[in-house]
Length: 102
Image (cartoon, rainbow, N blue to C red; front, side):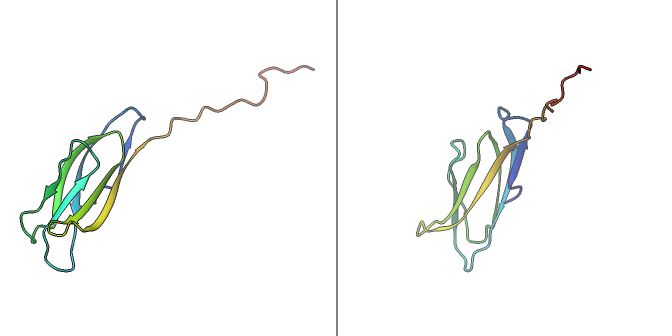
């Protein structure tokens, strides 16, 4: 999957991103992709020749994707999109008093 990270300006900001999921299987099989994101429905390929999926998502939380075999429902792979807010600028604490006594 690319990208694997989405960096937001702060914790409250949503990540809007286009993801590309690519896969290869050891033998021809039809796969389905599921996620724990409420807006993304289960997607199944039309044929064993399909090897990628592009989705646009908007989220504030990490999303876990799972690829399963359409026939057997066996889990084949999993990947996670991580949503990471940038660090807030560090406020430097002054250790010395701004005045002194002589």
